[in-house]
Image 1: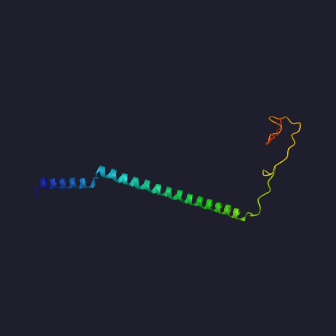
Image 2 (image 1 turned 90 degrees about the vertical axis):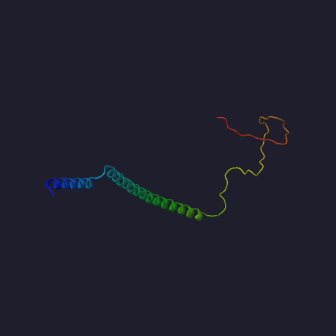
Length: 119
């Protein structure tokens, strides 16, 4: 083999080796994109896990408060209802209207008496 053939062959080998060593720009961009997506997915997964833990804690607190309220309601006495204040709505009261200003007939079967205070 001549020196020229050897140089050409060596040059051809080095070209093909450098082509094999050099990365395809599209493949590198794809790899970078995939790595970026994996990093974003991992960060999102961690955020979701943190939010879930926080919600679990808050739900536990709410459940504890509801149980306390239910216990308080169950411990309330079941006795009679508290005494009502004011006039009994089922009783008929007699009101004297002699000398009071009147509208309508004096002997009407139904009398409505209104009490008010003008200040």
